[in-house]
Length: 415
Image 1 (cartoon, rainbow, N blue to C red):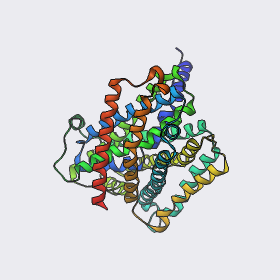
Image 2: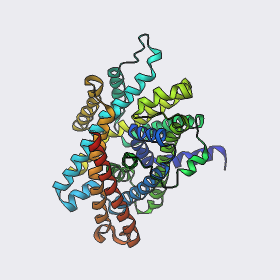
Image 3: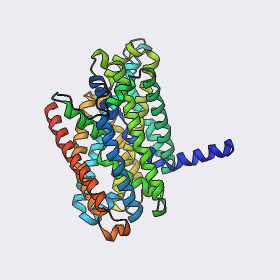
Image 4: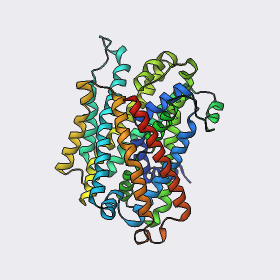
């Protein structure tokens, strides 16, 4: 095959992975960065195994939700309203939208804090660029992208953000990479005998396995127009998406494990990672890492603008037209939330913890409702869930319940 032919084939492959790249961009945000960095700094690569486990479970779930939409033609949230009643669907909608709005505040706070910290040497006062100005700039940028308003355009923007994020984190990892033997050892399940070890595991799982991710997957598959003949492509897309989630989170963990862990330095949030890593890895390495954090933040913030209008359209049966005045108004309100922490102050990490608490409550509900739908012969026909698949989904459901209980207990202690 000629070089132009190969490039065309690669381009078609990347284009076919649009939904998967969208999920990676949404999922690997500042919450994932903070959790992975904090874990790597405190425990090295010991917690690679829960990360791997959560990504395997995520693969199975995004495959299940995508397959449901391919076969039934319905999205998850609209099906919840149709088959379980409007009150339950509205409860799920309120939980996920409130979680996303609170999460938007936290993500914007983390991104602006990190850039302000990184920019201190570049400003005459040494205080760094104003968080308010940064919030206006980042919010204006992603709202402009939203204003353009087509799904294909959204896919392209997310692909750019994910590519920049991936390149940044992987380059930083290779600059400060830990011993490969430590990575292999981290795949062996162990839990350190410390009070907050289980909370860290729950946090790592929670940032990877949030229920909103699976609702989004259902919408993305419908937007893509996949049909039963495309199930193989849907499966490949799910595999690539979950694999990238694991590799990027592992790379972030390795950055902290290779530099901070040997020195006993602790990371509580992303800004700590910047201030502690720079003296050890150098200005160039930390600049690349900051670029990764900003890309991760923007790739997470941008879908946040889409989710409330998308979910509202799903539950009301309206077209997902992002150019409608109502949807643009909802998106503008979401962007305005990003100013709250820069203007009024607050702890971004605490805000994100609250967001994850709401996500933890609703995730098991979303999963059990989908399990019921996958077993409806009238919806799935010959693609109804098998006994083996039901057993796997049941294990995942119990796992999310346990992680949700563990996370909420730990969050209660933190609050």
